[in-house]
Image (cartoon, rainbow, N blue to C red; front, side, top):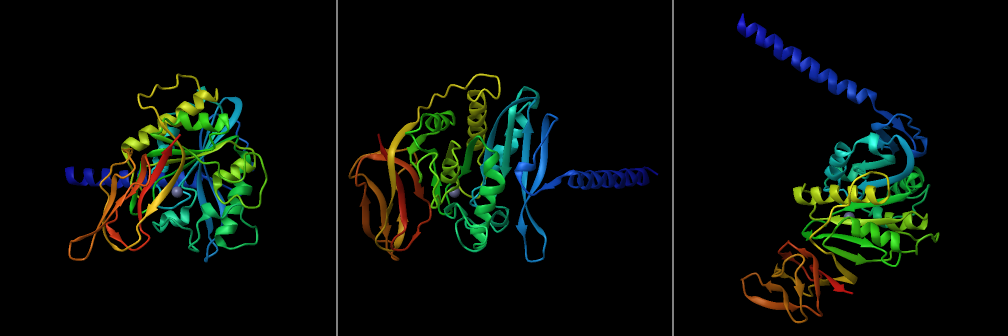
Length: 352
Ligand SMILES: [Zn+2]
C-alpha cells in the first residue's frame, strides 16, 4: 500500500511538473518587433522575438525579458551573446531580472539573454554563415544570412532602447579582464562605463561618431551610437563558461546604471577597485609557430622589455621570447599553447 501511494505521488508530481512547463511555454507570446511592446502592468514579462525562419519553416526565436516599471521612464536595453560562445551576460540578465523589484522601477528594462540563439546552440562565436554578426551592421534587408540578422536587430530591437549595454566575453583560446569599451569623449558614455566598475576602461570610439548616421557601423555598439543611443560594450571574462565573480560584478554594474539613470532608487555601490583608463590597445602576435607560454597575468602592469611570450619547438627548446614593445596593462591573453605564425599573445592596453 505504501509503495502504491508513493508511486501515485511520484506520478502526480511528474504530471504537475510537466503541465507547469507546458503552461509556461504556452503563455509566452511571440513578437515580430519590440516596437509592439505596450505593457501596462508592472512586473517581469517574457516574450519570444521572431528573427526569421529556419530550413523547416520554423521561426528563429530570441528570448526577451521585460521588467516593466510602474511609472514612465526610459528604456535600458541589454543584449548578451551576439557572439554565441560569450555566455556570462546571460546569467547576468537572469539574475538582474530576479533581483529587480518592478514596483520600484521607473521605465523598463528590456534584456535579451542570448541575442544570437543559432550560434549559442552551436557553441560558436560566428553566425551560421561563418560571418561575424557584430561586424555586419547596419546589415541589409535583402543581404546574406548574417546581414539580414544584423538588419533585424537594427530594425526590430535597437529603436526601443534609450541606453544600451552590450555584454561580451573573450573568445576561444583567450581570457579577459572585466573591461569596458567606450567612447570616452562622450561624458554619458564614459559614465556608463565607470558605473560597471570594470578593471579597465578602454577608450574606443567605434565608428561612426555618436549620433552620426553611417553605412559602415559594423558593430552593434556603433549602430546604437549612430542612432543616438549611448552604448558601451562590456567584456566579462572568459568564453563558454559562467563565472560567478564576473556575473555578480555584472549585475551590480547594471544596478548602478539604473540608479544613475534615476530608474531605480538606491545607492551606487562604492568600488575599492579604481579602473585603469586606457587610450588605446592592440594585440601582439607571434611571427612563428610553436608551443606558446604567456608569463603575465590579467590586469598586470608591464614595462617595455618585459617578457610576454615564450615559444618552444616540438622538442621543448625555447626558440623565441617576445618582449613588451611599450609599457601597458594586460587586458587579455592567449590560453591556447598551440600556436601558428600570427597567433595572439596578449591584448595590451596603453594607459592614458
Ligand atoms: Zn564578443
